[in-house]
Length: 265
Ligand SMILES: Nc1ncnc2c1ncn2[C@@H]1O[C@H](COP(=O)(O)OP(=O)(O)OP(=O)(O)O)[C@@H](O)[C@H]1O
Image (cartoon, rainbow, N blue to C red; front, side, top):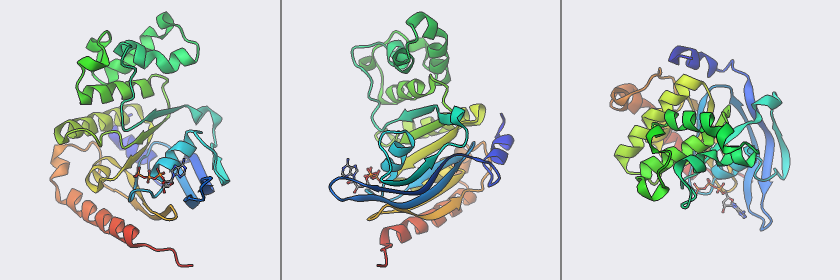
């Protein structure tokens, strides 16, 4: 799939891969993490959830992944076959005693796939993130960026249609983050997944996303839904373009409004 087709599939016309319908999440201590959250995540889009700390971004990802249930409301998957999910966390969370190969094999191993049977898929996932030469290395031998690449390969090894990423690059230095941003976009354009990406960064969200959903806290809710109408492929020239700056300004203002938003009783 090329970039042009991708823009078409991420348009308003694309059907949802998953829908949150009136989702509320109240934790047992009484914290209202999400209030009446309604959101269609559309096939093929690169959607970022942006908002202040505690607005429920991670809770949205966890509920979509089935790591917890809404207190009320529904999460609907129109096509059950699309339910295969990859999840990338802020920390790479690799097993230090296991090789890169074995770390990436883990999700298949948990499904009962033997090492021999998994080999092709594991090596393909490592190739996608540029680490096929490191299958026998151990996590301690890798840089922070390489560990994150292993974590992404592990999320991709089951060939998910939906990739959930919770601030995956927040702990990396800027140069490594920019490189991983570019590589992630290239993979997304090539393979046509749907991505839901959580970030605190206006700049990162504008660079990557076809759509940004801005959330406010206490209680967590959607306050703005912004299309980033800039063509893909995006590259380092885009980072310094007027169009990029204009979008950053719009999104930054939306984030400020979200941080000041109060619920009117
Ligand atoms: N297991 C839990 N029990 C009680 N409260 C929780 C639990 N998990 C999250 N919360 C609370 O729910 C709210 C939303 O949390 P969540 O982690 O989804 O926010 P977030 O937007 O991802 O924050 P951050 O950007 O800081 O990671 C916060 O007030 C948080 O303290």
